[in-house]
Length: 208
Image (cartoon, rainbow, N blue to C red; front, side, top):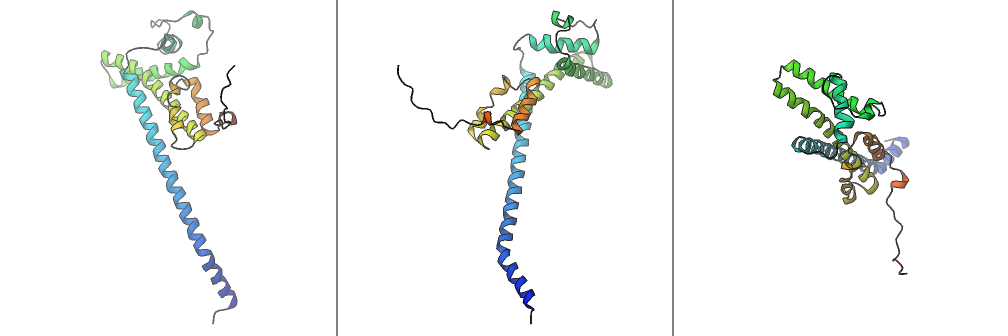
């Protein structure tokens, strides 16, 4: 005959079993949803990188001269020397700008030149590599800006919302540049109360 303690433990287990099974199902569903969301986010990031690289390599125009004179021209001089033929404007000659941004592209130029030497590329291919390398670098930066702006929109308006995708056109203007990438990444993880959607109803406009 079973002891009272064993019988009581068996009764408690039978009572808690449905709740335990429900908790296990809830955890499995949450893990599956998290994995699905992670896969979706990864796919979106890869798509944005591919789109930005394709866009950067296919466009033959430019937005403004600062794309060259505040980044690529100083970077070319940093990578290949003062006699390399770079067009340096007066603010760089007077050391009025920070060299952090062009230093990134100077490293890209230097690595591209080293890779070209290692692979013994022909002069034409060497030139094409030097043209494409900074474009691809900036495309990745822009894609990350796109991605984290979308993540910020999801955090503000909820996953898979139309409002989150409505924020996508903004990166080209706001977060598409390197100095604005870190704020976009930070805001995607720590949304400030100021950025929360406004829920105050607006009354009708009064006629004067």
